Every structure is written in C-alpha cells, then in structure tokens.
Length: 552
Image 1 (tube, rainbow, N blue to C red):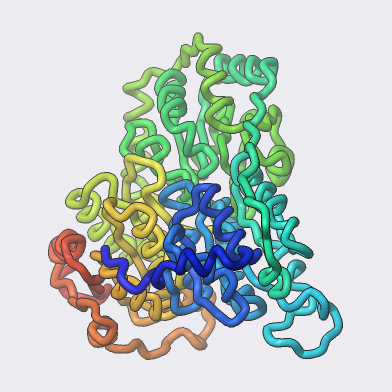
Image 2: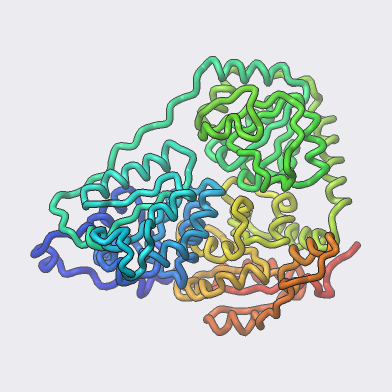
C-alpha cells in the first residue's frame, strides 16, 4: 500500500528544541503512547497544532474527503482490529459531519475516539459569530458517546485521555469525544505526558455462575444467542455449544463467533419468522453480549417463553426490554469460561436428531426466499465458496447485505460488518478503507448498494490515493429498492426513490480506479480476487436485472 504524501517532512529537531511543545503536539504524542498508529481526518485552520504534532510521522494521518468518511474509516479500523479507531476533525462542521459515523459506532458498540478542536474558550456562549461556532459543542455529541469531554487547560488532556481509554477497556465499547479549544491547543506544555495504568474488568460473582450452570444443566431445549459483545468469548462459546448440544443464533455483529457453518448454528437469522418461531420453543435462553435489539429481528418484541440468562458488560441491558431471570454483569469471556468450569452438562437432546431438526429449518428458510433474495444468495454462495475464509466483508446498508446476515457463513468473528443498529447508508466504502488500513494484509471487500454508495462515493479517491487493492461489489437495482418494495407493499405510490444513477464505470475510472461490470456471479468473484492483487480499487457492478441469474 502506498503511503506517499501521507506525512509531511519531519520537523527540524533543532528548531523544535527552541520552543515548548504545544498542547496539540502533546496530545498527539500521548495518543501514540496509548498505541494509536493512525488517525483519519481533514486538516483545517482549527487543527493546525494537532497537525504540527503529526508532522514527525509517529502517527499516520489518512486524509478523508469528508469528515463523515473519516468517522466511518475510524469505525471500520476498530471493527476489524478491536482497537480504538481515531478521527481527528475541526470544530463545528467537522464534528457535525462526523456525527453520523459516531452514531453508528454508538449503536454497534465500536470503540471510536473523536478528537476535535473547539472555538476559543474565552468566547464560549457569547454568540459572537466565531468561525465554526457551536453554542455547546460537547452537548452535541453527548447523546451518542459514552464520554463527551472538553479541556479548559492543557492539564485536562491527560485525564480526559485516561478516562477515554479506561472506558474502551472496561466498559461496553462506545465512542468518546474529546474537544480541545483552539486557545488551549496552542498553549505550551513543558512536562512529558504519560499514559495511565488501565484497570482490569472485575470477575463475576461465583454464586451467579453456579446458578447459571445449574439452570443450563436442567434445560431441555436451551438456545444460545450471541452478539458482538461475545467476540472475545468465541473459543469458550464454541465449547459450550457442543457441551450443551444447544442451537446458537447470532446477532449481525455476532456472526462467526460460533462458526456460521457449525451444525448447531442458525447464523444471524433472527430476522426470519421461521427462526423467531423456533426461538419461542426454548425453555432457557442464554444471551451473551447481545442487547436482543429490534435491529436484529425487526420485530417489536421477540416471544421468549423460556427462562432468560443475560451476560453483559453493560448493566443497563440486564433489565431493559427483556428483563433477565438471571443477570450477570461481566465480560463475556470470563463468564462463559467460568460456566464451563462448572461443567457436568448432559443435555437430553440427541445431537443427530437436533442437527436434522435444524437442517429442516434452514431448508424452510430457503424455500421462503423472495426473488431478489434468491439472487443475493447465488452471489453470496459464490463469494463464500471462492474467497478466503478470513475475508472481511464491509457491508453497506443494502438488500444484498440484509440477505447476507443469514445467507453467507462466516467462520471467524470480525469478518462481517453490517451496521444494522444505526443503519446509515454510505458506511460501507469508508468502513472498508479503515479496515484495510488497520490490517493491510487481510483480504477486504466492500458490498454496497447503488443508493448508499453515492453517500460517500468521494472516499473512493482515498482508496485510490493509498493504492489500495480494494474490490467494491456494487449491487445495482435501480435506486432505493428496499424503500420501493416497502412502498409497494403498503400501496403507496413511489415517491423520491427512483433517482437516476450515474455511469458507475466511468465514475470509477474518473477516480483512478478500475470499473468493470460482472458477466456472472463467477466473474464477480474472479474480479474480487484479481482486485486484491492490484494497486488501485476495483468497482465491480452486479446488476439485479441481468440475464445470467439462475432461477431454478
């Protein structure tokens, strides 16, 4: 991957020694000590002191084309790596542009750090019409962050940073916003800031673990539900599924924690009515690291007839829409490992008959697919069979990805990104760029719809500039087809959903990328593999109304 033009020349050490480090420089230096190696953003007049700190190349700066793209890139970086992704933006419009991506990170529990400048602290609240002014910038981001903090002096920054990284390590991972006014950014810092010693998450209470194990031992028809909060518990959850002989259903964020091709896995299929009905027959549900969200099932309320055990790091989830019969506030890995140690699980269900039962349920789902979903499945099956199993799929909000939640099988966590929580169009391409920056050796492919792709199409220039071998599959179905389908189902005339598309092939070429229309699903997967070997992105257009689809 090319990194030319990403770093200005290194600062002259002799000149640097003649002056004190500014707060902006010290902030960047402290970030690097917390392990941050990349920030995404667009420099502006209010971030110049940050840029001075970036000039030595210790932290890489990736220039986005819109702060929303920068936020999504930071989000994608965190999704694939598990490390906090960082976006660095100007005050005012930089913050509000990035806020959509912050909302996505909030909804999907992604550790994203938004660092911004702010107007001069001496004029806050005076309404003088200062450049990039927001009356209370901290309050703007507060509802979508676990912490939204403002520095009033340089000494506040180390404390703010310590709180941010403590939150990432010990709490439900969610975005944090640190705001530093421009006058504070320019103030001198004489001391050397050091990172804080971060605490560990406490272990759950042993009596709760014993109670959970006893409930599971007595269960006749247990089901395990896993979400993104269970990623670190993947190995132990796979053992528990086998020991309990329990079917497992994942959320969209939980795909691959237990391999989707495991004989007892129903994939992320809770959106399917067939699986919702099956779930209602469970006498015990063990929900691990999942908020049992409406955006996984898209029903107002799941029918859970059995006893509910919830394991979650977020105390607010234990007794929300689905109150737990037993709630364990804990890291998922610790709790599941402790349950396994209790052992002595001997589920009464015969494994062979259970696998047969689940096989019939999967066939029932296949028989009830729509014409569009059948086409989605043909492409998804081809990708699953022909691409490496560690491929990271950065999904935008589109029908192909909706089907992919239950229609493609992941064998590993952090392989499938479908941000269903906030469900904002345009996330796919910049998420893929951020993912590829975080793990350049890993195969990454973007799945996008023609409508959502246009939200952040300008970020294609970033991938081109970085010489990324990034394939983008563009599902072309004539516009916002999901909303078209919804309108038709309710006998509403189509309004505002039939906009004309550009010539996507020429658009890609104008941004120094390859643009190719697939001639078949096999051709599409071939183009993906070829795209990884290039030094430029490849836009692969797949038309829903093409004549090569197999309707048998």
